[in-house]
Amino acid sequence: MTRRSRLFTAISVLALVLHGTGAAPLYADGGIGIRLREATLGRKNDPRAHIYIIDHVNPGTRFSRRLEIRNTSSEPQHVKIYAAAAEIHDDKFMPAADPNANELSSWISLDRPEIVVPPNSRTPVKATISVPESATRGERYGAIWAEVGSTRPGPRKNVQIVNRVGVRVYLDIGPGGDPPSDFSIDHLIPGRTEDGLPVIKATVRNTGERALDLSGKLWLSDGPGGLNAGPFAAQTGTTLALNDTAPVMVVLDARLPNGPWKVTLTLQSGLIKRTVTGTLTFPEQNAFWGLPALLDSPVSPIVIATLIVIAACCVYLFVLPILRMRRRRRLRAARA
Image (cartoon, rainbow, N blue to C red):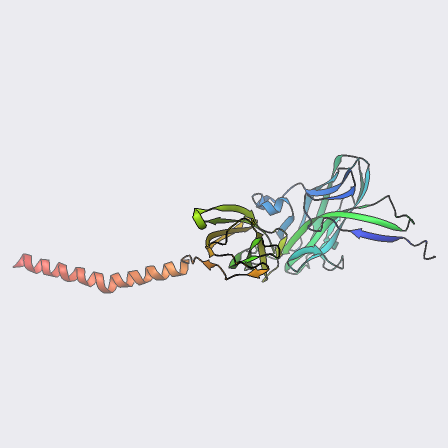
C-alpha cells in the first residue's frame, strides 16, 4: 500500500461532555444526537438519571435501557452505535484511551449496532447490560456512542472526519442497596480573573461512595448599599470521583463592587443538595485570590445532642435537688 493511498481518520469528539441531549454538528445544516428515553424506576425523581444511565445492580443482573438517535441534518445518516469504557480524569468524565479499559463495554450490547436515520427524524435503539455472576464490587464508567463518518473526504481523499456523541453510563456492582452519595463544600475563596471578572472558587469533597456530577447556583446579598445579585450558575462539567476533591468555579458580573457580601452557594448532584453561607470580599487585583470566605457554622446534630445531654445532667444534678428541698420545706411548714 503506497503512502498516498492510505486512509487517515480524524476523530472529532465534539460532544465530549457526553450529554444525553448533545448533538455533534456534521454539516452546516444539522448533525446527530443521542438521548436516554427512560430512567431507572427507583431514580425517577433524580435529574441525572434522565440524562445518564445510572444504576446499582447485583452480579448476574440483566437490564435494558431505551435510547434515541436524532438526525437534524437534511440527509440520511449512517450511524454506528457501540459502547466503550470511560474514566474520570482531572475532574472530567471522558472516554478512556483504551475502549476496553474496564469490563463494562463488554457487558453492553445494542439491538441495532448500525442504523440509517432519515433526515430530520429520530430512531429508537435499545441497550442491554448483562452483568456476569463473577463481576466484582465497584463502580464502572462507560459511554454508549453514536458515530457518523463524514462523506466529504479531504482534498486528497485521504482524511475521514468522524463525529460522535454519547450517553454516560455509571454502573455500580455489589450486594445490597445503592451505596450512599454525599459531598461537602469545604472552602469558598473570592478572586478575580485575568480580565478582572469577580470569581468564587468552591472546594468540594466527595464523601460518599458514588461518582458525582456537580451543578449549582450562587447568590450575593447584603452588599454595599444593600445590593443583592444572582443567581449565578456554577461551572458545569465537574465530575467528582470517589474520595476526590475538586474546585467548582462561579464567574460573576464585572460590575459588582468588592463587598463585603453575604454569599450563599447551593450545589447539587442528583438528589443530593448542599448549601453553605458566609461573608466575603473580592480582591482589587486581577488574576489574584483574596481571603477565604468566613463561613457560617451550622450547629451539627452531634453538638445538639451533646447540649441536650448536658442540659439533662444539669436538671438532674441541680434543679431536681432544689425542687425536692423546697417540697420538704413546704411539708414541714404544713405539719407545724
